[in-house]
Every structure is written in C-alpha cells, then in structure tokens.
Length: 68
Image 1 (spheres, rainbow, N blue to C red):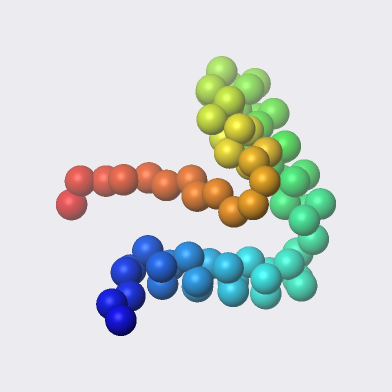
Image 2: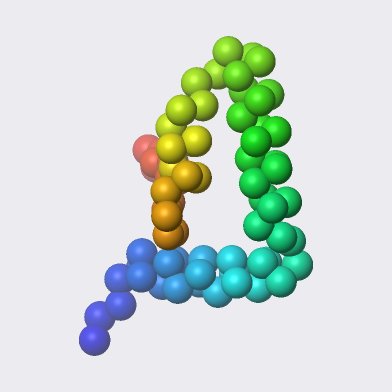
C-alpha cells in the first residue's frame, strides 16, 4: 500500500495534538488565538479567514504554499 505524504503528516499531527493537549489546555490555545485576533484587528490585519478556520468542528489545516 502506498502511503501519501499528506496521510503521514495528518497522522503525525494528530498524535502531536493529543500529546500537547496533555500539556496545554484547549482553553489556553483559544485564549492565544483570541489574543492574536485582537492584535491583528488592532493592526488592521484581516482575521476572518483565521477565525473561520478555528471555529470549524474537527481538524482543519491552515497551510501556506511557497514556490520552491
């Protein structure tokens, strides 16, 4: 069976998130995200895409693609 690199990344990320949840609470992540959103809003940076992504149920990816 051929494993796609994205499948490996997803599996690794799921494991990492579970491990981090034992160290850092979800509430702490939410507060950090809200702090970032407030800062960006104060600086005039568009935050709607970020807020929409973190409000979705389940796991979401926020990705950046760069030309190699």
